[in-house]
Length: 410
Image 1 (cartoon, rainbow, N blue to C red):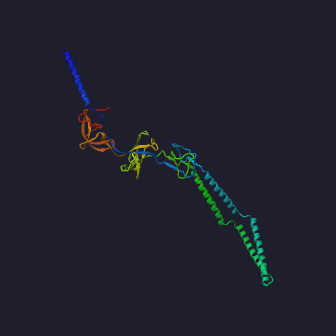
Image 2 (cartoon, rainbow, N blue to C red):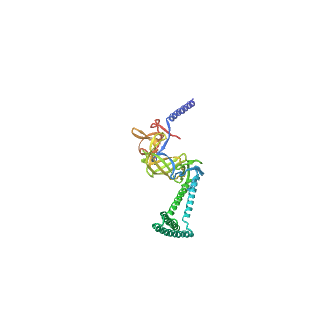
Image 3 (spheres, rainbow, N blue to C red):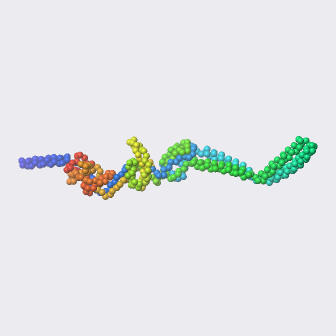
């Protein structure tokens, strides 16, 4: 009987213990915690930028014609001077050939004009002049005789006039013969030569212009780089000023970021920038602010809101992971402070116009009033109220009361 009483008593004790521990477990909250430590605190402005090349070039055609022989595809790497495409040059080639024919013809005429006169021709012309002088002397003697006879009434007026006209004719013929002899001796005049030379020079200049323009019918790469866009197709008819190809250098990539105008004043040249991208598999790349543009512009946000923004260029130290045209996230560091006591910003809450946290002490929640300093992107500086190594509760809610049992989530 006594033994049976002892067994019953033990059962009661076990039941009581189970109830106690159940009550205790029901009042225990599992929470996430953070161990207070010292570190760096920073504030950032976050924006999404685009990877670009400083040597990006859009090639525009200067010629008119059909595109032929497009020798590249997007993504191809090219060297400076590589032929990218050609334009049908048949028309301009015909124009060059036509001008060359004019030059050849005019040079032939000029050569004939300035060619030295044959000596026999000069002798013949000289003999003609001497013959004409004899005729003039004879005509003069005949005129003098006719005049005397006419004055004596022995010759009619018509006969006298005929002798006078013959003298005039012979004198004119002598002048012509003498001029012909002079031209043969002197050759083509300087003015005539200058006219020929000016006409030939004008045609040569015209041909040089055409040949220079013909160079525009073969489009070559102005830089080493990669083809990032082709705006035409084989057989497209091109007009001067049309964009045909985009080439980007690959050794001078940077990030172009449009920052809100209201925030850009906080960003300084050479300020630290951190870039990252899930799409490119980039955890963190270090960079710095290279240029802040002076002019703001309007831009429609993804939510359809018009915003004033300012362009900021960011240089990246290691560009090997960057890809032209990709979006990439950036964080502009505004300030930073080292070796300060830190807690996550989601551990601090306000109560009666003061800042508090819950710490874990002897497995129980304890309310602690703190004084904060700088507020960074994810962390807050604690100036007083906590010590390094204290355990604070992350994201405390209304279920957490001072003195409640706490256990850490695993």
